[in-house]
Length: 241
Image (cartoon, rainbow, N blue to C red; front, side, top):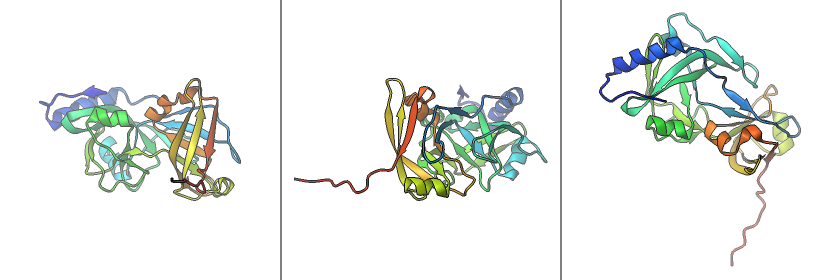
């Protein structure tokens, strides 16, 4: 994270950011993958780093008229990719994250997804939301090589979630928006993460859990030896004396 002094104007910030972006349009890939296991389909647990979704209109504003996103790396879910394009996210007091990857394809509304540490760095108090649920969330300034946009809302911490096809949901006995547990076995750090939201899709969807960078690092995901999705036991009885 780079910090920009409070004395700089918005135009100064945009000029600095564009300079950085023009020099560093190539960056690291979006996801890290851990050893996986699961039934009925292979389960993958991936770290989804900070990223941005943009509308076609905002792509042209940020990168130039007529510009479209350029796929750099295809993601695990069919049709989705990390683009070559990156933007800077500027928060309160001109704090910024200078290289935030744009994901494609374009969406109907622009949105920024950050980890808790990113939010602290920017000075933002972000709610945990499912992607697309941005009503009442904080906004930010997004700066690209050709221009900038001000989002009034749309910056979130993405809720940990699992993408499932109808067959996957049937196999696990869950429905869209249900909550599951994820058990991750890793050296000296075996952990159970609760409140993993089910995101149901069509038959093309592959069984995949998304965690943010903070969560993945905390459970040592890259060295995990086994991962397992667990449906909570809703029939358990709590007895009170």
